Amino acid sequence: MGLTRNGRIHYFLTGFLIVAFLFVSWFRTSTSARLIISQSSIQSSSSAATETKLSKNCASNLKLYIYKPISEKLLFDEQFPTGNKSVLLSRSDDYLLEDALLRYFQHQPCIITSDPTQANAFLVPHAIASHFFNVPNANQHNLESYFDETLRPFLKHIQQDLPYFNQSISGSDISKNHFFLNTFDNGPFCDKNKHTNESGVFSHKVWKEVVAPMMQIGYYSQLDQKIPHNRQSKRRKFCFIPEKDIAVPMYDEQGRNSLNQQQPAQPTSTAFIHHCNHHSNNDYCRIQWRSYLKHRALQVSRPFYFRGTISKGKQCSPGIRPFLQRYCSLQTTSCHFQNLSASMKDSIFSFCPAGWACWSARFYDAWDHMTIPIRLSEDIAEPFASVIPEYSKMMISLRTTSISGLFEIMHANNNSQTMPKNGSDLLNKLAFLAREWVHVCAAANNTTFDNNNACLQHPISKRLEVIAKNRHLVSWAQSEEGGAYTSLEREMSNRVRNN
View 1: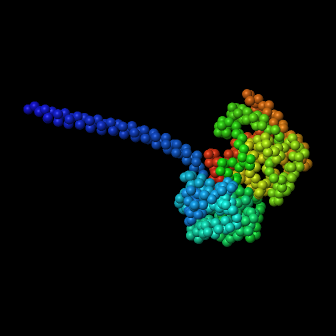
View 2: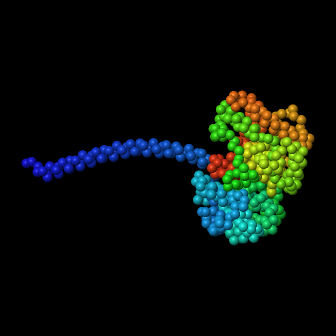
View 3: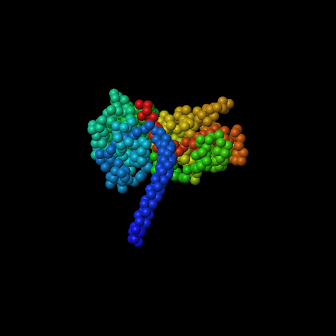
Protein backbone atom coordinates (compact mmCIF):
# COMPACT_ATOMS: atom_id res chain seq x y z
CA MET A 1 0.00 0.00 0.00
CA GLY A 2 1.49 3.38 -1.01
CA LEU A 3 2.28 6.16 1.46
CA THR A 4 -0.05 9.05 1.78
CA ARG A 5 1.14 12.49 0.96
CA ASN A 6 1.64 13.26 4.68
CA GLY A 7 3.45 9.93 5.18
CA ARG A 8 5.86 10.68 2.34
CA ILE A 9 6.61 14.10 3.82
CA HIS A 10 7.21 12.52 7.26
CA TYR A 11 9.49 9.87 5.74
CA PHE A 12 11.43 12.48 3.81
CA LEU A 13 11.92 14.73 6.82
CA THR A 14 13.03 11.80 8.98
CA GLY A 15 15.62 10.75 6.40
CA PHE A 16 16.83 14.31 6.01
CA LEU A 17 17.31 14.70 9.77
CA ILE A 18 19.23 11.40 9.95
CA VAL A 19 21.57 12.47 7.14
CA ALA A 20 22.00 15.92 8.67
CA PHE A 21 22.79 14.35 12.05
CA LEU A 22 25.40 12.06 10.52
CA PHE A 23 26.97 14.95 8.61
CA VAL A 24 27.13 17.16 11.69
CA SER A 25 28.65 14.34 13.71
CA TRP A 26 31.31 13.76 11.06
CA PHE A 27 32.05 17.48 10.80
CA ARG A 28 32.39 17.94 14.57
CA THR A 29 34.66 14.91 14.84
CA SER A 30 36.85 16.14 11.99
CA THR A 31 36.90 19.68 13.31
CA SER A 32 37.69 18.48 16.81
CA ALA A 33 40.59 16.51 15.47
CA ARG A 34 41.85 19.54 13.61
CA LEU A 35 41.32 21.72 16.70
CA ILE A 36 43.18 19.25 18.88
CA ILE A 37 46.10 19.32 16.47
CA SER A 38 45.90 23.11 16.18
CA GLN A 39 45.57 23.67 19.94
CA SER A 40 48.40 21.26 20.53
CA SER A 41 50.57 23.34 18.24
CA ILE A 42 49.42 26.58 19.89
CA GLN A 43 50.03 25.18 23.35
CA SER A 44 53.41 23.95 22.27
CA SER A 45 54.23 27.35 20.86
CA SER A 46 52.77 29.09 23.91
CA SER A 47 54.74 26.84 26.23
CA ALA A 48 57.91 27.63 24.34
CA ALA A 49 57.13 31.34 24.48
CA THR A 50 56.33 31.10 28.21
CA GLU A 51 59.48 29.14 28.83
CA THR A 52 61.49 31.77 26.97
CA LYS A 53 59.81 34.54 28.95
CA LEU A 54 60.38 32.75 32.24
CA SER A 55 63.99 32.03 31.43
CA LYS A 56 64.46 35.71 30.63
CA ASN A 57 62.51 37.25 33.52
CA CYS A 58 62.59 34.51 36.16
CA ALA A 59 66.27 33.66 36.14
CA SER A 60 66.70 35.14 39.62
CA ASN A 61 66.53 32.76 42.57
CA LEU A 62 64.93 35.55 44.61
CA LYS A 63 61.57 34.74 46.20
CA LEU A 64 60.51 37.89 47.99
CA TYR A 65 57.80 38.30 50.59
CA ILE A 66 56.68 41.84 51.40
CA TYR A 67 55.25 42.11 54.89
CA LYS A 68 51.57 43.08 54.93
CA PRO A 69 50.95 46.48 56.55
CA ILE A 70 48.86 46.49 59.70
CA SER A 71 47.94 50.14 59.15
CA GLU A 72 46.83 51.89 55.98
CA LYS A 73 48.87 54.90 57.10
CA LEU A 74 52.13 52.99 56.65
CA LEU A 75 52.58 53.72 52.95
CA PHE A 76 52.14 56.31 50.25
CA ASP A 77 50.67 53.87 47.77
CA GLU A 78 47.43 53.66 45.80
CA GLN A 79 47.00 50.03 46.81
CA PHE A 80 47.03 51.08 50.46
CA PRO A 81 44.94 54.31 50.52
CA THR A 82 46.12 56.63 53.24
CA GLY A 83 44.47 59.93 52.58
CA ASN A 84 47.96 61.41 52.89
CA LYS A 85 48.98 61.21 49.25
CA SER A 86 47.46 64.62 48.53
CA VAL A 87 49.93 66.33 50.85
CA LEU A 88 52.95 64.96 49.03
CA LEU A 89 54.92 67.85 47.63
CA SER A 90 57.43 65.65 45.79
CA ARG A 91 59.96 68.19 46.95
CA SER A 92 62.63 65.65 46.19
CA ASP A 93 62.03 62.55 44.09
CA ASP A 94 65.01 60.90 45.79
CA TYR A 95 62.91 59.82 48.76
CA LEU A 96 60.02 58.36 46.75
CA LEU A 97 61.94 55.17 46.02
CA GLU A 98 60.15 53.69 49.04
CA ASP A 99 56.91 53.79 47.08
CA ALA A 100 58.36 53.05 43.64
CA LEU A 101 60.20 49.93 44.78
CA LEU A 102 57.05 48.40 46.25
CA ARG A 103 55.13 49.12 43.07
CA TYR A 104 57.81 47.42 41.02
CA PHE A 105 58.03 44.25 43.11
CA GLN A 106 54.25 43.90 43.36
CA HIS A 107 54.17 43.51 39.57
CA GLN A 108 56.91 40.88 39.41
CA PRO A 109 55.17 37.47 39.69
CA CYS A 110 58.43 35.63 39.15
CA ILE A 111 59.95 37.23 42.24
CA ILE A 112 57.12 38.03 44.62
CA THR A 113 55.40 35.41 46.77
CA SER A 114 52.35 35.72 49.01
CA ASP A 115 53.45 32.76 51.12
CA PRO A 116 56.17 33.69 53.61
CA THR A 117 57.07 30.04 54.14
CA GLN A 118 58.15 29.89 50.48
CA ALA A 119 60.23 33.07 50.64
CA ASN A 120 63.99 33.33 50.86
CA ALA A 121 63.92 37.14 51.21
CA PHE A 122 61.73 39.59 53.13
CA LEU A 123 61.16 43.31 52.61
CA VAL A 124 59.70 45.71 55.16
CA PRO A 125 57.39 48.24 53.46
CA HIS A 126 57.38 51.74 54.89
CA ALA A 127 57.58 55.40 53.93
CA ILE A 128 59.52 57.07 56.74
CA ALA A 129 61.72 59.21 54.48
CA SER A 130 58.77 60.17 52.26
CA HIS A 131 56.81 61.32 55.29
CA PHE A 132 59.78 63.23 56.65
CA PHE A 133 61.06 64.90 53.48
CA ASN A 134 58.02 65.16 51.24
CA VAL A 135 55.23 66.41 53.48
CA PRO A 136 54.76 70.10 54.29
CA ASN A 137 57.04 71.49 56.97
CA ALA A 138 59.36 68.49 57.21
CA ASN A 139 60.72 68.48 60.75
CA GLN A 140 61.46 66.40 63.80
CA HIS A 141 57.79 66.14 64.76
CA ASN A 142 56.84 64.56 61.42
CA LEU A 143 59.56 61.96 61.76
CA GLU A 144 58.73 61.06 65.35
CA SER A 145 54.95 60.96 64.88
CA TYR A 146 55.19 58.63 61.87
CA PHE A 147 57.55 56.35 63.76
CA ASP A 148 55.59 56.30 67.03
CA GLU A 149 52.11 56.00 65.55
CA THR A 150 52.74 53.84 62.48
CA LEU A 151 56.16 52.31 61.88
CA ARG A 152 57.10 51.28 65.43
CA PRO A 153 53.94 49.15 65.97
CA PHE A 154 54.59 47.50 62.61
CA LEU A 155 58.20 46.69 63.50
CA LYS A 156 57.10 45.25 66.85
CA HIS A 157 54.52 43.14 65.02
CA ILE A 158 57.28 41.73 62.79
CA GLN A 159 59.48 41.08 65.82
CA GLN A 160 56.94 39.71 68.29
CA ASP A 161 54.01 38.24 66.34
CA LEU A 162 55.72 36.66 63.33
CA PRO A 163 58.55 34.08 63.34
CA TYR A 164 60.47 34.99 60.18
CA PHE A 165 62.64 37.88 61.39
CA ASN A 166 63.79 36.11 64.55
CA GLN A 167 64.60 33.01 62.53
CA SER A 168 66.86 35.09 60.27
CA ILE A 169 69.24 36.32 62.97
CA SER A 170 71.59 34.52 65.29
CA GLY A 171 74.08 35.79 67.83
CA SER A 172 75.35 39.20 66.82
CA ASP A 173 75.00 38.62 63.07
CA ILE A 174 73.03 40.70 60.61
CA SER A 175 69.84 39.09 59.23
CA LYS A 176 70.48 36.64 56.42
CA ASN A 177 67.35 37.50 54.42
CA HIS A 178 65.56 40.65 55.69
CA PHE A 179 65.91 43.93 53.79
CA PHE A 180 65.06 47.47 54.87
CA LEU A 181 65.09 50.36 52.39
CA ASN A 182 66.55 53.63 53.63
CA THR A 183 66.82 56.79 51.56
CA PHE A 184 68.16 59.13 54.22
CA ASP A 185 71.46 60.86 53.49
CA ASN A 186 74.13 58.46 54.80
CA GLY A 187 71.41 55.99 55.77
CA PRO A 188 69.12 55.77 58.81
CA PHE A 189 72.05 55.22 61.17
CA CYS A 190 74.48 57.96 60.14
CA ASP A 191 72.20 60.68 58.74
CA LYS A 192 73.27 64.11 59.97
CA ASN A 193 70.18 66.12 59.20
CA LYS A 194 69.48 68.59 62.00
CA HIS A 195 66.04 67.10 62.65
CA THR A 196 67.19 63.48 62.66
CA ASN A 197 70.01 64.39 65.02
CA GLU A 198 67.54 65.91 67.45
CA SER A 199 65.12 63.02 67.08
CA GLY A 200 65.32 59.86 69.13
CA VAL A 201 63.99 57.61 66.35
CA PHE A 202 67.33 56.17 65.20
CA SER A 203 68.45 55.50 68.76
CA HIS A 204 65.14 53.93 69.82
CA LYS A 205 65.23 50.39 71.20
CA VAL A 206 62.88 49.03 68.51
CA TRP A 207 64.95 50.64 65.75
CA LYS A 208 68.13 49.08 67.12
CA GLU A 209 66.54 45.66 67.65
CA VAL A 210 64.60 45.34 64.39
CA VAL A 211 65.89 47.76 61.73
CA ALA A 212 69.61 47.72 62.55
CA PRO A 213 69.96 43.91 62.13
CA MET A 214 68.40 44.00 58.65
CA MET A 215 70.37 44.34 55.42
CA GLN A 216 70.12 47.97 54.33
CA ILE A 217 69.36 49.24 50.81
CA GLY A 218 70.24 52.92 50.54
CA TYR A 219 72.04 55.98 49.22
CA TYR A 220 75.32 57.72 49.96
CA SER A 221 77.02 54.68 51.41
CA GLN A 222 80.51 55.18 52.78
CA LEU A 223 82.94 52.49 53.85
CA ASP A 224 84.42 52.27 57.36
CA GLN A 225 82.10 54.95 58.73
CA LYS A 226 81.09 54.29 62.32
CA ILE A 227 77.57 54.91 63.56
CA PRO A 228 77.26 57.60 66.27
CA HIS A 229 77.59 55.89 69.63
CA ASN A 230 74.00 56.48 70.77
CA ARG A 231 72.69 54.77 67.61
CA GLN A 232 74.95 51.72 67.69
CA SER A 233 73.62 48.26 68.53
CA LYS A 234 75.20 44.90 69.18
CA ARG A 235 74.59 43.88 65.57
CA ARG A 236 75.57 47.11 63.85
CA LYS A 237 78.55 49.38 64.53
CA PHE A 238 79.10 50.70 61.00
CA CYS A 239 76.77 52.63 58.71
CA PHE A 240 77.44 50.30 55.79
CA ILE A 241 78.47 46.63 55.85
CA PRO A 242 79.78 45.74 52.35
CA GLU A 243 78.99 42.02 52.41
CA LYS A 244 75.45 42.65 53.67
CA ASP A 245 74.16 46.10 52.70
CA ILE A 246 73.42 47.35 49.16
CA ALA A 247 74.31 50.79 47.81
CA VAL A 248 71.90 52.05 45.15
CA PRO A 249 71.77 55.12 42.87
CA MET A 250 69.55 58.00 43.85
CA TYR A 251 66.01 57.67 42.58
CA ASP A 252 64.37 59.93 40.04
CA GLU A 253 60.79 59.51 38.76
CA GLN A 254 62.01 59.87 35.18
CA GLY A 255 64.84 57.41 35.72
CA ARG A 256 67.41 60.22 35.60
CA ASN A 257 69.42 62.14 38.16
CA SER A 258 70.15 65.30 36.24
CA LEU A 259 71.17 68.51 37.99
CA ASN A 260 70.53 70.83 35.07
CA GLN A 261 67.46 68.94 33.77
CA GLN A 262 68.70 69.15 30.19
CA GLN A 263 67.94 66.39 27.73
CA PRO A 264 70.44 63.54 28.18
CA ALA A 265 72.69 62.57 25.32
CA GLN A 266 71.70 59.72 23.02
CA PRO A 267 74.63 57.31 23.20
CA THR A 268 74.36 56.17 19.57
CA SER A 269 72.04 54.28 17.25
CA THR A 270 69.65 51.58 18.41
CA ALA A 271 71.79 49.11 16.48
CA PHE A 272 74.77 49.67 18.72
CA ILE A 273 72.89 49.52 22.00
CA HIS A 274 70.63 46.54 21.36
CA HIS A 275 72.48 44.55 18.72
CA CYS A 276 76.12 45.45 19.07
CA ASN A 277 76.26 44.70 22.78
CA HIS A 278 76.14 41.02 21.75
CA HIS A 279 78.09 41.34 18.50
CA SER A 280 80.93 43.68 19.37
CA ASN A 281 83.13 42.38 16.54
CA ASN A 282 80.61 43.36 13.89
CA ASP A 283 82.17 45.90 11.52
CA TYR A 284 78.86 47.69 11.01
CA CYS A 285 78.52 48.17 14.75
CA ARG A 286 81.98 49.63 15.06
CA ILE A 287 81.38 52.02 12.19
CA GLN A 288 78.17 53.15 13.90
CA TRP A 289 80.04 53.63 17.15
CA ARG A 290 82.83 55.54 15.50
CA SER A 291 80.25 57.78 13.86
CA TYR A 292 78.85 58.57 17.28
CA LEU A 293 82.33 59.27 18.69
CA LYS A 294 82.86 61.82 15.93
CA HIS A 295 79.52 63.45 16.76
CA ARG A 296 80.43 63.50 20.46
CA ALA A 297 83.90 64.94 19.81
CA LEU A 298 82.44 67.78 17.76
CA GLN A 299 80.27 68.75 20.74
CA VAL A 300 83.22 69.20 23.09
CA SER A 301 84.53 72.75 23.42
CA ARG A 302 86.47 72.40 26.70
CA PRO A 303 87.78 69.32 28.53
CA PHE A 304 86.23 69.86 31.99
CA TYR A 305 82.79 70.76 33.33
CA PHE A 306 81.61 71.76 36.79
CA ARG A 307 78.64 73.62 38.17
CA GLY A 308 77.85 73.94 41.86
CA THR A 309 78.55 75.79 45.06
CA ILE A 310 82.13 76.39 46.18
CA SER A 311 82.63 75.14 49.71
CA LYS A 312 85.61 73.66 51.50
CA GLY A 313 83.83 70.43 52.32
CA LYS A 314 84.09 68.49 55.53
CA GLN A 315 83.97 64.72 55.60
CA CYS A 316 84.19 64.07 51.86
CA SER A 317 86.24 65.83 49.18
CA PRO A 318 87.74 68.34 51.64
CA GLY A 319 89.24 71.33 49.83
CA ILE A 320 88.59 69.92 46.35
CA ARG A 321 86.05 72.50 45.17
CA PRO A 322 88.28 75.49 46.00
CA PHE A 323 91.15 73.67 44.28
CA LEU A 324 89.03 73.18 41.14
CA GLN A 325 88.00 76.84 41.24
CA ARG A 326 91.63 77.97 41.42
CA TYR A 327 92.67 75.66 38.62
CA CYS A 328 89.86 76.72 36.29
CA SER A 329 90.46 80.42 36.98
CA LEU A 330 94.00 79.94 35.65
CA GLN A 331 93.11 77.51 32.84
CA THR A 332 90.01 79.21 31.48
CA THR A 333 90.20 77.42 28.11
CA SER A 334 90.12 74.04 29.83
CA CYS A 335 86.98 74.45 31.94
CA HIS A 336 83.29 75.16 31.75
CA PHE A 337 83.23 76.27 35.39
CA GLN A 338 79.95 77.76 36.67
CA ASN A 339 79.08 78.53 33.05
CA LEU A 340 75.28 78.69 32.96
CA SER A 341 75.19 78.58 29.17
CA ALA A 342 77.10 75.28 29.02
CA SER A 343 76.11 71.73 29.91
CA MET A 344 77.98 68.51 30.47
CA LYS A 345 77.80 67.55 26.80
CA ASP A 346 80.10 70.50 26.08
CA SER A 347 82.92 68.69 27.91
CA ILE A 348 84.26 65.16 28.01
CA PHE A 349 85.17 65.09 31.73
CA SER A 350 82.91 66.18 34.56
CA PHE A 351 84.20 66.97 38.05
CA CYS A 352 82.02 65.12 40.58
CA PRO A 353 83.08 66.07 44.11
CA ALA A 354 80.87 65.08 47.03
CA GLY A 355 77.58 66.87 47.61
CA TRP A 356 75.48 66.71 50.78
CA ALA A 357 77.09 63.40 51.55
CA CYS A 358 79.89 61.50 49.79
CA TRP A 359 77.77 61.23 46.66
CA SER A 360 76.42 63.71 44.18
CA ALA A 361 73.81 63.61 41.42
CA ARG A 362 76.56 64.89 39.11
CA PHE A 363 77.89 61.36 38.92
CA TYR A 364 74.74 60.01 37.23
CA ASP A 365 74.24 63.26 35.33
CA ALA A 366 77.64 62.70 33.71
CA TRP A 367 76.60 59.26 32.48
CA ASP A 368 73.33 60.73 31.21
CA HIS A 369 75.34 63.09 29.02
CA MET A 370 77.96 60.54 27.92
CA THR A 371 80.63 62.38 29.89
CA ILE A 372 83.27 60.63 31.99
CA PRO A 373 82.77 61.47 35.68
CA ILE A 374 85.86 62.29 37.73
CA ARG A 375 84.72 61.43 41.22
CA LEU A 376 86.73 63.07 43.96
CA SER A 377 85.62 61.58 47.24
CA GLU A 378 86.72 59.19 49.95
CA ASP A 379 85.81 55.55 50.62
CA ILE A 380 82.58 55.30 48.64
CA ALA A 381 80.53 52.11 48.40
CA GLU A 382 79.89 51.79 44.67
CA PRO A 383 76.22 51.27 43.67
CA PHE A 384 75.77 47.94 41.85
CA ALA A 385 79.51 47.62 41.26
CA SER A 386 79.41 43.83 41.64
CA VAL A 387 76.69 43.33 39.00
CA ILE A 388 77.66 45.93 36.37
CA PRO A 389 80.27 44.74 33.85
CA GLU A 390 83.51 46.77 33.81
CA TYR A 391 82.10 49.18 36.38
CA SER A 392 85.47 50.73 37.21
CA LYS A 393 85.93 51.79 33.59
CA MET A 394 82.79 53.93 33.66
CA MET A 395 84.46 56.63 35.75
CA ILE A 396 87.66 57.90 37.22
CA SER A 397 87.38 57.41 40.95
CA LEU A 398 90.02 58.97 43.19
CA ARG A 399 90.68 59.56 46.80
CA THR A 400 91.27 63.25 47.26
CA THR A 401 94.53 62.45 49.00
CA SER A 402 95.85 60.69 45.89
CA ILE A 403 94.77 63.01 43.10
CA SER A 404 98.14 62.56 41.43
CA GLY A 405 97.06 59.07 40.36
CA LEU A 406 94.49 60.37 37.87
CA PHE A 407 96.62 60.40 34.74
CA GLU A 408 98.14 57.04 35.61
CA ILE A 409 94.66 55.51 35.64
CA MET A 410 93.85 56.89 32.21
CA HIS A 411 97.10 55.63 30.69
CA ALA A 412 97.62 52.49 32.71
CA ASN A 413 99.25 50.73 29.77
CA ASN A 414 101.54 53.62 28.82
CA ASN A 415 104.69 53.55 30.91
CA SER A 416 106.45 56.26 28.91
CA GLN A 417 104.37 59.09 30.43
CA THR A 418 105.98 61.26 33.10
CA MET A 419 103.76 61.29 36.17
CA PRO A 420 102.62 64.75 37.33
CA LYS A 421 103.77 65.88 40.76
CA ASN A 422 100.71 67.92 41.73
CA GLY A 423 97.05 68.33 40.94
CA SER A 424 97.47 71.20 38.45
CA ASP A 425 100.01 69.31 36.37
CA LEU A 426 97.75 66.32 36.51
CA LEU A 427 94.73 68.18 35.13
CA ASN A 428 96.90 69.79 32.45
CA LYS A 429 97.90 66.32 31.30
CA LEU A 430 94.31 65.18 31.31
CA ALA A 431 93.21 68.27 29.36
CA PHE A 432 95.88 67.45 26.77
CA LEU A 433 94.50 63.90 26.54
CA ALA A 434 90.97 65.27 25.99
CA ARG A 435 92.10 67.62 23.22
CA GLU A 436 94.00 64.78 21.60
CA TRP A 437 90.84 62.66 21.62
CA VAL A 438 88.77 65.49 20.12
CA HIS A 439 91.32 65.99 17.35
CA VAL A 440 91.52 62.28 16.52
CA CYS A 441 87.80 61.45 16.67
CA ALA A 442 86.48 64.64 15.05
CA ALA A 443 88.55 63.77 11.98
CA ALA A 444 87.54 60.08 11.94
CA ASN A 445 86.44 58.65 8.59
CA ASN A 446 82.94 57.21 8.89
CA THR A 447 82.97 55.14 5.70
CA THR A 448 85.89 52.80 6.29
CA PHE A 449 86.83 50.47 9.09
CA ASP A 450 90.28 50.03 10.52
CA ASN A 451 90.71 47.77 13.53
CA ASN A 452 93.63 49.89 14.72
CA ASN A 453 91.79 53.16 14.29
CA ALA A 454 93.18 55.74 16.70
CA CYS A 455 89.73 57.02 17.64
CA LEU A 456 88.30 53.61 18.53
CA GLN A 457 91.39 52.64 20.48
CA HIS A 458 91.77 55.90 22.37
CA PRO A 459 91.40 55.41 26.17
CA ILE A 460 88.60 58.01 26.30
CA SER A 461 86.67 56.17 23.58
CA LYS A 462 87.09 52.91 25.45
CA ARG A 463 85.55 54.40 28.59
CA LEU A 464 82.70 55.99 26.67
CA GLU A 465 81.91 52.62 25.10
CA VAL A 466 81.57 50.99 28.53
CA ILE A 467 79.33 53.86 29.68
CA ALA A 468 77.13 53.53 26.58
CA LYS A 469 76.67 49.80 27.15
CA ASN A 470 76.03 49.88 30.88
CA ARG A 471 74.66 53.25 31.98
CA HIS A 472 71.05 51.99 31.79
CA LEU A 473 71.85 49.61 34.66
CA VAL A 474 71.61 52.52 37.12
CA SER A 475 68.40 54.00 35.66
CA TRP A 476 65.21 53.67 37.72
CA ALA A 477 63.02 54.20 34.64
CA GLN A 478 60.83 51.08 34.49
CA SER A 479 60.78 51.33 30.71
CA GLU A 480 64.52 50.59 30.83
CA GLU A 481 64.95 46.86 30.34
CA GLY A 482 67.54 45.51 32.73
CA GLY A 483 67.77 48.82 34.58
CA ALA A 484 68.34 49.65 38.25
CA TYR A 485 65.48 47.46 39.43
CA THR A 486 67.07 44.44 37.80
CA SER A 487 70.47 45.40 39.20
CA LEU A 488 68.93 45.58 42.67
CA GLU A 489 67.30 42.17 42.21
CA ARG A 490 70.70 40.70 41.40
CA GLU A 491 72.32 42.33 44.42
CA MET A 492 69.56 41.04 46.72
CA SER A 493 69.79 37.59 45.17
CA ASN A 494 73.55 37.55 45.74
CA ARG A 495 73.11 38.51 49.40
CA VAL A 496 70.53 35.78 49.98
CA ARG A 497 72.61 33.15 48.17
CA ASN A 498 75.80 34.00 50.07
CA ASN A 499 74.21 33.98 53.54
